[in-house]
Length: 156
Length: 119
Figure 1 (tube, chains in turn brown, cyan):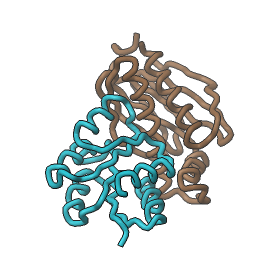
Figure 2 (cartoon, each protein chain N blue to C red):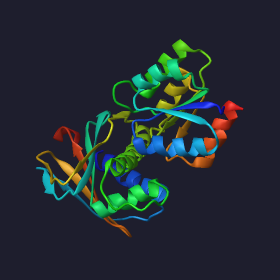
Figure 3 (cartoon, each protein chain N blue to C red):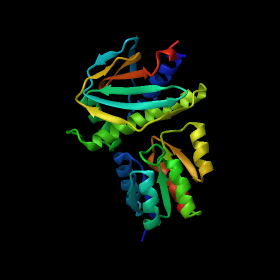
């Protein structure tokens, strides 16, 4: 079940990036960290998940990737500085990934509620909880996806 | 004066994009960031149509739809949300929304839908 849940987030990330940004992503790694992990996170977006699956998922990226995503959302406008509009754009992109993932989870029988996205800049991502980390490579650079389970009992 | 649209979304980038789109077609646009703000602004702005997100702080979009319809049973509300799972669509339509557009929002689709309910 755990890998099926994580795969819905992986597929949702790839699908939404393809639809919105017209980029093709390659998943290069997916690793399970039973005791948590620490990762560099110049920009991170976190969303909580409740219901059939309880946990959080985070999208970690470099500022350059955030700028490009914001630029596409804003119709190709050149983005040279990190501001609230960039935060809003990547928050909305993550919201769409969450929406796509929750649709896929419901098809698996897991009815989930997603919280509003919280965007953080310039901090390391760190958790002591069990999590899966997926890595994607694409034309814009690299992106990491962290799927964290509230309880290790959910991981089978 | 053009018809009035209230755009409700907690993401400023979505509000800005929809505002620019609607204004370019001569609609008058007002924005709200939460469901609660939407209900308040509905009473004063009296829009011809509302576009409503679902996941927002304070009051979610489905509750806001119900509250607006209590004020005006003829309110025209279109859901614009990333939450496209069947139970959310059903809940929104049962609450009284006219239709549901799943994000990402494509300008042509949004405009066609808005025009359908306004004209």
